[in-house]
Amino acid sequence: MRGEEQLREELQEFQKEKERIRSIVGQIGGSNDKQNKIINIILIVIIVALLVLGGVFNRIAPELAVQVAILFGVIKLIWMYYESQRASHFQFWILNSLEFRINEIYKKAKKIEKDIDELKKVEVQNKNDK
Image 1 (cartoon, rainbow, N blue to C red):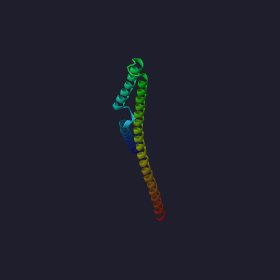
Image 2: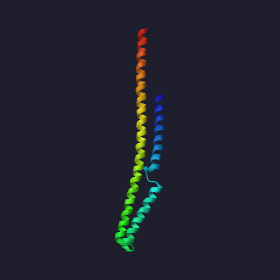
Image 3: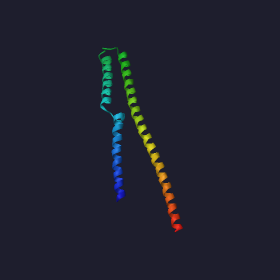
Image 4: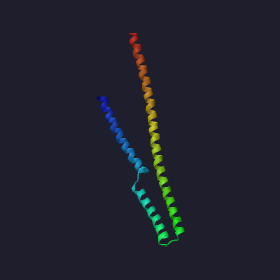
């Protein structure tokens, strides 16, 4: 019973840590936030306005309107790439730190196994000596 309680506590702690990491990744750029939505809306509105003004109303030379709309489209793609790279970098950093921790735990587990084996040898030797 004690083992089950300990496992449940560890599971709850893991769930809390997972939610905390999820929220941090979301803040860094892992999910859409208000700033990204606003920038996307502004760029889309500018692109549509340029195409409507240049193509439909002929207020701007159509060639110029298309070229500037393409420029803003490229700016939007660059922004999306930047946000994606920011999130990917942070996720890589998290995975790297987790790998480091797992390696430390593995080394400690191996040391504990070695210590247990030595203790068993000492116990067997003490029993044989008696």
